[in-house]
Length: 325
Image (cartoon, rainbow, N blue to C red; front, side, top):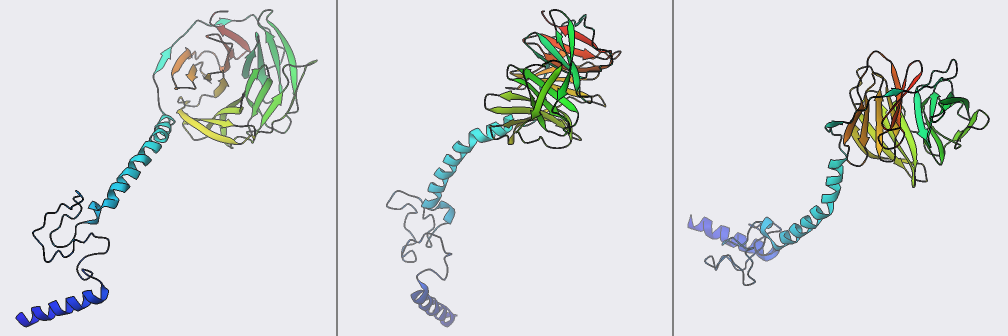
């Protein structure tokens, strides 16, 4: 036994002379305290006041080395930098919010639409409401002061598909087609024709179940619901017309009902074919119920006329208004 121990000691000493001290027993990356085999009683604290050599036999675990303090500082800085991003992603997750009720009794407007017109969409601007028959590319503008409905035909939208969304402001009319393409139109019809042209914005993704787009100071924004999905996707595009996802929100369960979408400056209007109309804030997702279901009538699109005033289209066609007039 004694001879074997001496052989081991001599072999180990020779190995360390060639390969470096403690390489036979200590893993690479560990801190050494030379000559630890001569001073096993030394305090684990170093003369620099660091407890990084907690090991009387020649070193301690690499997780306690000074480099780990630097890594901890880097991790703290990284967490501080990524914290706001994580909060933003959490905010943009689809979420179901409580629905507040702000119902007012709708009143039927004394409007006589042109014969044969079957509009399905609405867009309002400056005291007028435009009703669109998406598949036929036509509609009528209703002057709410006189209740006069003036027919028009859309020009320049051929080949884009059925019109599924519309928004109207001082810059003009913006139409969303079932193909995802957008069409930019003039401020109003001229001699019965509302002239449009294909927008330079990239078409929205395929598979649209409902969609609407509107202009912003920096480009465009859009809301879309896709086949087989239970969320509403909010999109933004700059002057280059390239869409990026701005967020998602839970869509109301349709259960076979047709959904229509419309924008205001700060809200998204969601209407279903049973008469339910929801107003959802774009900033925080707070949702208000504007109209309750009314099953005896087939309902179509709805739009805001500013504030708490809304227009809602029913089969017939009939135009209903709610809120202060």
